[in-house]
Image 1 (spheres, rainbow, N blue to C red):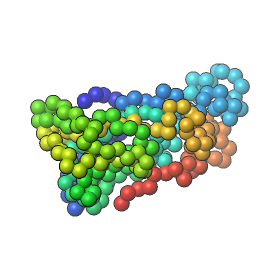
Image 2: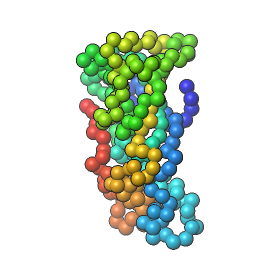
Image 3: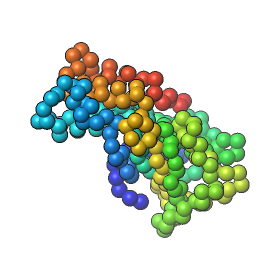
Image 4: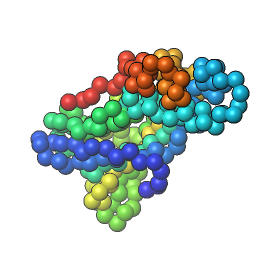
Length: 229
């Protein structure tokens, strides 16, 4: 189980009993930002290169702020979701951390096991692994599950009749690696979200006039992932 940036999740509750906890780890960050340095400098009215490093950092911070606000990721990146156990029954309440893009729900749907993945839009599921009590990983064949990337959030549904391997590891014994984002380039990102990043850069840079960072993020409010109750 590799290292990387972690994003801990709230636990899930089944019939008021806490039985599943989850976590998130960034495996591969986006290769580019949704807004380029020259584009951001033009938006800020900056003509020289003295603050290029600062503005580049602000672009990353602004993109992360927009992603956190919306509960989505913009440029292609890969993540790992970890769970303690398979779901046993239909969700009554899914615990979510507000406004950080963590929208994962686990439940049995019509007799099939469904796991909703955070950080939409979902591109692909790379691997699902189950760990034994000895810490040995077993990869679940792709034929045993269906990936629904059209849903928001995306989901994995285990196929009918597929057996679920026993999770022997007491904590984080189930891993799902997946890629998410609108695409590999800035042009793949919806224009509204790119504009929100630009306005967030301006707010962070301090040339926002009366516009706060919160106001900049509200530009992207249409793309916020709805909380699941």
